[in-house]
Image (cartoon, rainbow, N blue to C red; front, side, top):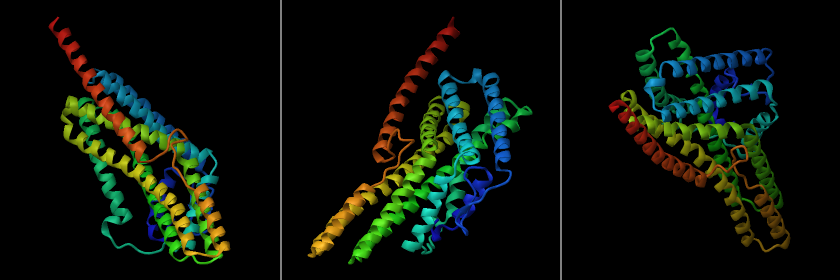
Length: 367
């Protein structure tokens, strides 16, 4: 964890208490084994599953007649993906291996010591706590305003509380989005710091130091992909589904929630773009290292130095990183444009399907 990102340790602590990530001791650089972590994980899993059952029951018996088939389909898919993110994090943390999470955090600390990323940033808007508060408030407005409007007005039973507990899964969603963006930004900063070292690389030792940094960075990205690959895939699927869900609310003006869904849809789109572009910036910076290495060769006449740089260039090329969603596709700006293209296509399908459904309902009423 970068020295300038020390407040993130507080966010990690909150995440650890929710069983999102293994408890990592930054002072001792080791994973802490909690005595009751598995019991805590089982309790959280039970609460989430219970809340899901209540949520599905309320949707089926209280909201079924109020929604179109597209609403119900998108809502159920949202339940599936959202729950998958929360349960996936808890199960992996409490019952899975922690080796890759340890390697991710340990490598980030090691790189801090090598690169010296300890400068303080006084920018108010770049403060971790300010970002998290703003990030959460917009999301809470979009989600909980909708939930309270629908549940309290249409149901008003003892199940209200349990249904809102189900929305607790969105806390996992908020934190994991926030941490993904910050981890990617952290890696981007480290790659930029490494590339600046090419301006001062004059000796064989400095060339080999750059090779070591490149290897550690590549291992860090690999650890990130291994740790969060499936979660990343579920998050992207959930975000795409949720954007379509917001569009569906807006098109039908369901419960007069067009404004909140417009805000939420823009928010989710920007969040998805932030995550994928943050990852793309890391990849771009890692490829830039290869260019800088071969460019540096032009400054040396010694055959030994040129061969050393040539070998470094091959090592950097081999260490060029990519972020993937469980190996299914790469996380970059091309994938982002493809996702938005898919959203646009399915938006047209929603308009057509809802129009046909409305016509069918009108015909039924006339009969």
